[in-house]
Length: 136
Image 1 (cartoon, rainbow, N blue to C red):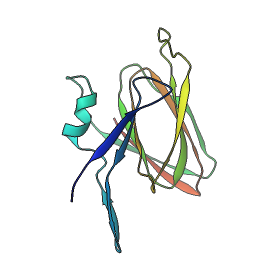
Image 2 (cartoon, helix red, strand yellow):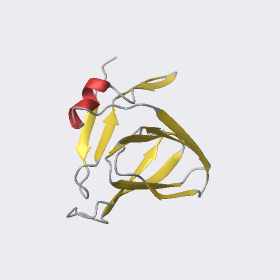
Image 3 (cartoon, rainbow, N blue to C red):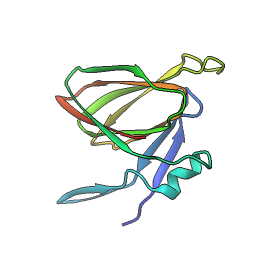
Image 4 (cartoon, rainbow, N blue to C red):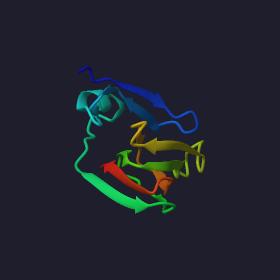
């Protein structure tokens, strides 16, 4: 199985990255890799590494408001269901301050978003149920 990621910077907000893993699929289902250190670390400052994972479950129409901090990187994805994911530039000295971008994250498209420090993120659940993951 070949593991590859396509990595694209957001068109709206510089510094936010959209990662799309390759997916191997057959009659049984599929398998994909959500994190491969040597692929993702190329985007990160030399001293940055992920310490832990967090999971959030939510029901249909739940809105998780804009939240974030000034020191944590987050690699996020939706493991089950579908969500409308928003990231906003909260850095007051940035030329894109308060600009935002959105991506539909789902268990079907398997997209991941790399959210830098100083950016807020939020999501609304579009499916009946969702499982959202933060690699922190």
